[in-house]
Amino acid sequence: MNAPHQVALGSELAQALREEGMGWQRPGPLLAGLLLFALTAVWWRGHPAWALSLGLWAGHALTDGLCGLLAGRRRFTLLLLPPAWLTGSLLGWALEQALTAETMDPAQRLTRLWLHLGFGAVLLALPLLQGLRRVRAVRRVEQERARLRAELQRLQAQIEPHFLFNTLATLRSFVRQGSAQALPLLDALSAMLETTLERVRQTENSTLGQECEVVSHYLSIMALRLGPRLRYRLDVDEALRDLPLPPLMLQPLVENAIKHGIEPCEAGGELLLQARHEKGLLRLSITNSGQPLEAAGTTGHGLALVNLRQRLQALHGDLAGLQLTRTAQGLTEAVLILPAP
Image: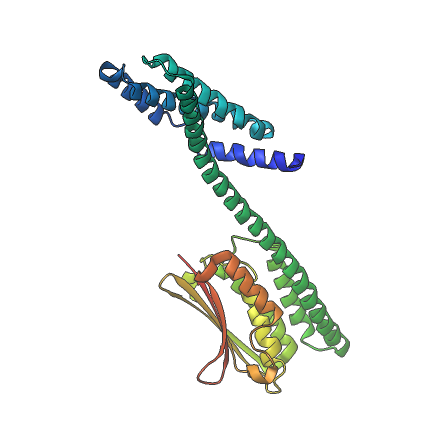
């Protein structure tokens, strides 16, 4: 094992030692053991089993204390753990030998030594492995969160230029034509940028209300670009607007509905965003009356939707989901399900 891996493993072991409370951080069991052996010494002092039990317990207690001292020495934890185990086990064995009245032959003494070493190794390895597994699980979660944060930033970097370039091209066209819609489009774009900049590169602590505000600005811009071909409505209860919602969950679905449903349809269509709170779940649906899924050549497996499903799985596992279906009225509906308090 090379040096960087040794340092990393030593750091993990040191953290595991702290999290498992080793180093007499939990004095209750230590005091209880001392009291128990002090009380039983009156009747069992001369019994070999009492000396063996005391030796095993004392060896483990000493190993535990020495390991606690190693928790602050991350760089050397991996190297110092074996000496701590050996020291505790050997002193426990020596204590048993000193308290045992009967004389042991060399084979018996060696057997007891192996018993102390094995007992100490098991009692040291079990909490260490458990703590190490917990430390690595937490680290994996943190790494996944960092990956999701980077992925979200990459997604934002893709969405924002694409949307801005298209909007600025439309604005330039309106200005050249002397259209009265140029100023409202500029105002809507400014409002959206102001809202977005307040949350620039935000990866958490967003709310349904904040995401609806971004979507509302986006839809007002698209309505100016598409004219009467786009009609939209947001049906979101005020009581739900403070519910937490990861950023960029709604906008890709709204953009997908316009791009594949309403924009290709000559007559346009209507977009409806609804939010419902049902049995601890937040149900968000985006329905559009534009071109059907089959006609648009879309089956719900586009890159944006795949990315969204991956984020949902990473954030909430099987508690969240995304469905893209046709309603009984022939409308296209995207349904987003997330856990909500």
